[in-house]
Amino acid sequence: MMHLPTIIIISILLNSIISSFLMSLYVLKKQKTYLYWCCSCFIFVLAQITAALRAFIDLDFVSHYLADLFIIATPLAAILGIHAYNNTERTKFSACLGVLLASGVILLPIYSSSFGQLYTTTLIACCFCYAAYALKTLHLGRITHFLVLQICFVVHAILMFCQAALLLSAPTSVVDTQQALAVILISHIVLSTCTALVWPVLMFLESEQVLTDLANLDPLTGLLNRRAFLNLSATHLEQANGCKKELCALMIDIDFFKKVNDQFGHDTGDEALKWVAKQIQAQLREHDIIARIGGEEFAILLPNTSEKNAHALSERIRLAIKNQPFIYRQQSISLSLSIGVIKRSKDSNINDLLAQADKGLYQAKHNGRNQVVVAI
Image (cartoon, rainbow, N blue to C red; front, side, top):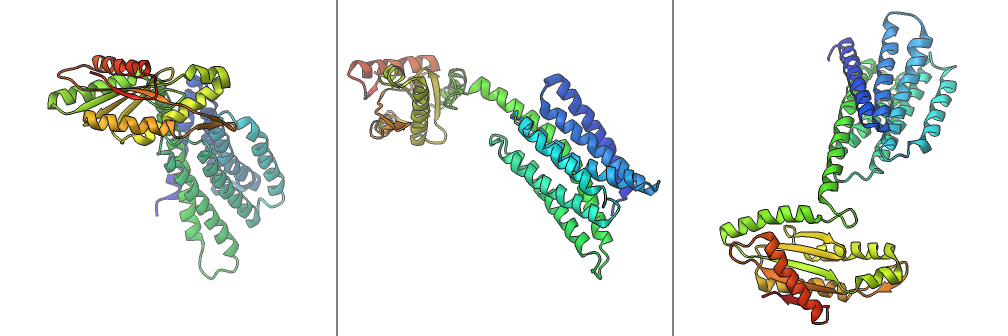
């Protein structure tokens, strides 16, 4: 087993550095999530220092009572840091402060006994369970690495519950539980430090992802925006030109969409756009590229697709919208699409390709809408 004092010293140093780093991030970005996690790391340092004083001074109020309160406050501050990410920490602050104050009262008569340690351990386990749940409610599905942090919380909770079970069984157990408790203590210190390291990294990744999304995604439908579509499509078209592979592009417009906004309101119009985007995506293959390029207009690039197959796909898309009314707030709204189709010509560029597809779209509208036209 590793030397416990060495682990404590390393943990104190690391958490102090992490705390300083998180404070600098808070000063730079003004995001409270970093402030709360800075406090969590700093409080954990105080918890370790006060607990370590047991080896040097016989002052239970400091080395047990204050240490236990610091240990309880550590995950509470982390929980507030999680909620601060989506600005809901104010609703949780009173609850966390209440838990800490109640713990201060409960621990006062029992902090020097095994019941104090049992209470602290059980409460910490519950805090980590809640932290895992709170992290899940953030809905940060774009960064799957957040699962690592959830696992840290869950494992931490399991360790604390195991420690509580050992404390309960210690008076009657014929097996020496001190070795197991020492292992759990080391695991607790290591996990807490790892968790403190993981959070700022994940927040940085999430911030970078948000910036990437703002640059490349349409905020309403979640599809690519025009800029990202043109960049990505240009690469695919260049490859198709070089390899002489088939490739087609579609331009899609929702018929009479202005009437939807005028008659039902822009909220309904926004929901209709999201619904149409979802219906179109359901007909596409994984490697097809779709974007909302403006208003009620969509563009699709179909790599390795013949004109015949592109026309067939366009018909499926058109019928998927035509045959299924959009329902919102108990209102049924019939929508239809006009679609222009164009196949890649020799050494064409993406702007020329979309311009030709747009001619097919214009012809579909001129012919009466709700139809597919292959541009010539």
